[in-house]
Image (cartoon, rainbow, N blue to C red; front, side):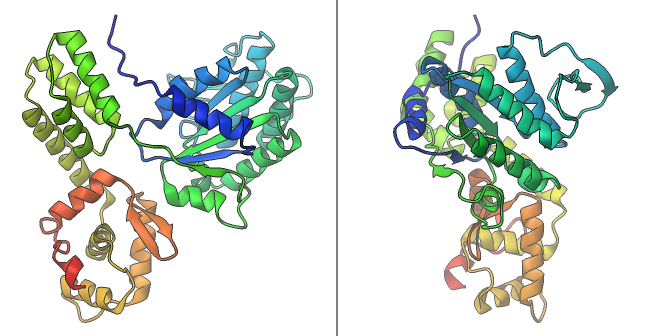
Length: 379
């Protein structure tokens, strides 16, 4: 039997469910950077706890259907309804070989046979299958988990899809318990905190706590089980923290140790961080950042006031030009947001979208021709 690296968090799952059952939440919005374990939590903690408490869980990976979210979401709602009807949702007509919607695998695009009364418009299908699912669920509440929902803020039809979802939830008030998750904070804010957005103030913003020392101890126990080796849990937790508290990164490190039969955490961590640095370099290279983009990115990493007179002068000094004005800096921020390197944390305030990348930028600013760390104290 293969090792199971999933660290159960049943208490957190129960607490989230009680947001609906005890605290009267209409919907939950959960932010966590990629790699912090939210998808595994939804599928392996929240889902089974929901089943135990008489709910019907429905999971939709919005990122997987991002090219056509209306079709993808309506398709998943239909599949859930068909399972309740004891119909096989896998019986479909294959229409094209193309990586597109429904997440059917192997690059197949498929179309389910339409049922009587089913509309052809995908937005209307969201409403149709939400209503059908609510009717079929009987007394059960439907825990609808929409993972990486920020993709709706990016897609041209995303606002219409969000509006259709909200209309469906409101029409079936009390039947659905929506959980929206995302890994881009500014896109989530765009969906839930902007007054004109369809999901404005629709979900309570809930904290997703990072894994703590208990996870490091859990990993030590798994290594002991597999290889009979006692790792230092304090050392392992230090490595976990250095990797941004991302469970996948630590598990990858430990698996490489198990493959090589070498259990020196210092060496393993150094190798892992080297690989991550190379990945960050590739990320910045692929983004093809301009010199101004790079100095603005460094300013974000250092927490500098991006538009202050002193910082504008700092940009000019670093670029070797006489003056940098406000408009090009705003353009640089727009490009950095489009490249998903930064997110908007508040009015005029931005943060690096990845905590490990932020640390790396602070450490490597000089090598990247960015402002050195000392500039943060002199600007």
